[in-house]
Image 1 (cartoon, one colour):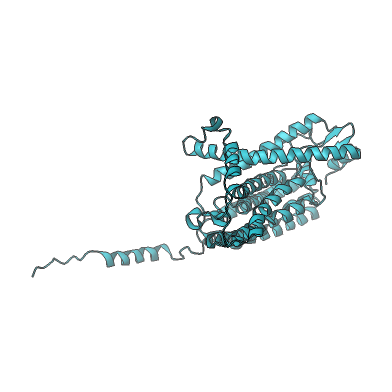
Image 2 (cartoon, one colour; image 1 turned 120 degrees about the vertical axis):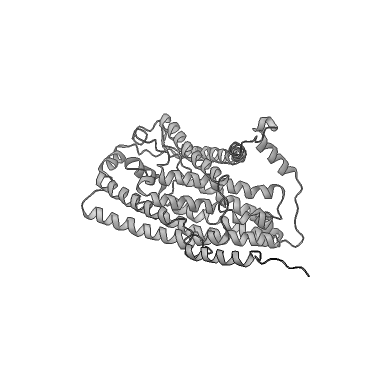
Length: 428
């Protein structure tokens, strides 16, 4: 913690709000977050259709209210459709599985700070629903529960395609969950805290973590795509192989809950990337929004900054989906276990060792030599990373290990076997 940051923390207002006002503010924040979250998930379905149409040079939804009412039409359709239940399904778990997938995606937002605090006449109001001191650990614990809903959906359906999709999903999420958790350890090393508010403040008074911890951001980004089952990691829902995957037997609103959970997970992952690596609600190139007095204007502007960063990553999710093909399953597992996990562990050791060396040399955290050392480490790591990544031998264990000369020789042998005979044909 820099001396400037410590001084600003001391001089800032510390008035706790009155209990009645705190309770009212908490209820209002719950209603606002739930409403915006659900409306945002619905509008993301429209945004994805519009963005995919724009990328493919065609019209998107344009019939219901010129396309803007398409999410409402989809919701009405799903509410009035008939609910179907397979004969051999385990009905209690079959009904419970979509709920288990949806709830963790929703409640993880409780600990994400989305704006600067507001200094009201009744006290400081934190712009986070539950400012837990272990907020980041809470997110990792709750978000990992979503896989249970997918596994139960596949198993309780008593359908082989649904079961295969749920097994794929559980293996995929376990594989990339470890890399995602490991990628955040360098963030915690720099912040010295697991509170998301402290992580935002540390970046505001120093440098955004995407500059100091570029490789950690890359690992987190790839793992976020895998955790949300988005392309190129949508193997649990591979329609060409599994019909529709783990939700094959679902219909009506239970079917929609899985997709709502997926879009909610996208929102949460985007907000986490903005918070952990891009300063959260911090407005760049100024400390005006981080110091007292905490006015309503600062709260609104920082809310806009946080929303802009989150929307950028949501657009990135959609951009990647309509750009890249999906991996083969062996490539997916190889990337997670043979590349992402060793890379995350190596990067943790490198960052921790560099922090010890810099502090041993007397460079305080936040000083320019400290940031220069981290920047040099990241430049070297990024060059090495992208020189060895995607060469066919690290990601895909099924790739050929033959030399180019051997491949040419084998092709020549195969061609000679299938070449037509050069001898003239003779009649009877």
